[in-house]
Image 1: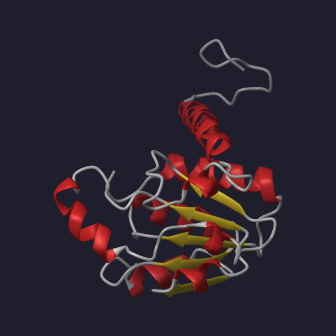
Image 2: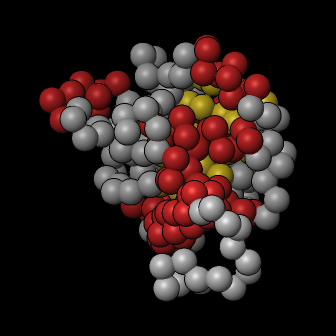
Length: 195
């Protein structure tokens, strides 16, 4: 929905765990519009005990009530600024999303001006931890919210992240089917013909 994107967040957490191991105490940075993707990413990151940093343009930041809620969910820390370099410095995972989401097409020119300086490029990624990964929920617009050499570079994990959306959805469906089942299923029991 416009408010949340939980399956994307599950895929993001799975991808970060695959790349970074235990996420407790690691830092996730989000650069861009505080939107549904950002909200759900931060919720799962908080539940996993991560340090959370936002860099959002003025007028596109998370409200204070949301920052307080993320802290209550278990985040190691929650910081927000209007300076991408501050958010990305030392981060283990750097996320962004399109600046113009579906339904916002009429705002494109205005948003392009307001988000100037928020492109995740090689200079920005150089501020992150040397082992940092770059993540994007896709579709991406090269040269706008992310530079081509970043999304197509060695730190990018956008394609494993996209593949993990399938695994996240399957896991969520399996969980829901099990929780609705009148009897607990034993290991190896198939659900819908798959294990």
